[in-house]
Length: 124
Image (tube, rainbow, N blue to C red; front, side, top):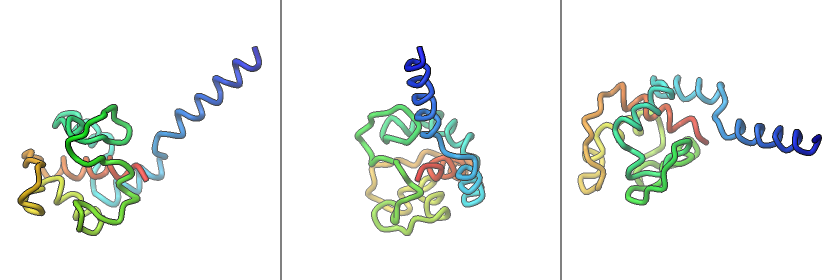
């Protein structure tokens, strides 16, 4: 019985360790001016996981590049410095950055782009 309780405790710790901390979510919100919670909803609403593998969202998509550990990356879209302003701009207007990208203009508002950026920045 003690072994079973120990195993359950270890599994619970492992599962909660995968979630971004409150401090990370706050940093992502302040950096982008968006809401990670609304960002996750916007990712679902706009179908981003149909093309991208995204941290914290079940997807095995292989069309676009994986959007994993975005806060730890040096570059975005191949050649842009990874900062909140560039990420928001690329999310909202990918073809203004790369006119030959397969990513379509999704008609996102600036608020939606900031929210999505905030969500992506919660994973390092």
